[in-house]
Length: 225
Ligand SMILES: Nc1nc2c(c(=O)[nH]1)N[C@H]1C(S)=C(S)[C@@H](COP(=O)(O)O)O[C@H]1N2
Ligand SMILES: [Mo]
Image 1 (spheres, rainbow, N blue to C red):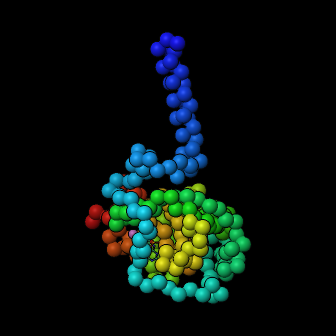
Image 2 (image 1 turned 90 degrees about the horizontal axis):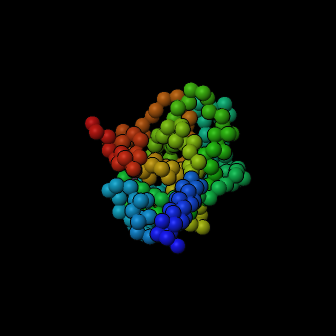
Image 3 (image 1 turned 60 degrees about the vertical axis):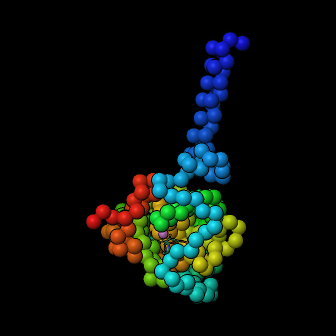
């Protein structure tokens, strides 16, 4: 075999591999690899990898009785929802694996979540045409805001399981929001209400100097003013 033919052949193979990887990336795969280069591609600027899972909040872990748990979804929608725990568990569930990026600098790879997909919520409530934002309200007084199209992303869940176990109370159980593409402060723990809004309403950290969007790849950590 001449060198020309050999390099042609390996070029074709490389092309196939790239196409396959692009497909994997589109499918949300390649999330379990752990070789150095891949890790670096997955680590946003200014972040370091941790293996444990730090707890960060305002210092209060609300005590939640599942009998009394309710989730309210309202605001600029055609159909309001109030779910009790049984209602919540009877909704469609999906599993996703995603990375956590905290604005304080730690990232934790390969978290396996189970929850109710945001897409399902949207199909039920039917946001009004003028709804632009979702505001999440938590049981500890915390709130955070996201654009509606970001809530509609395919990897957004109301998560109640993590790595095979029920989501623990310190990490926001029974149910927290999961917004994997944004710094973790957008993932409200102890969710009690989602408000669809026709205007933006900056949340707890957003009014205290955090960036309004929080894209880890753009290092949108703190607002400039
Ligand atoms: N209800 C509530 N949700 C919250 C917070 C909080 O204080 N209260 N802190 C946010 C921040 S700043 C981070 S980094 C993550 C931390 O989640 P963890 O404790 O599960 O790591 O929760 C986010 N969601
Ligand atoms: Mo955070």
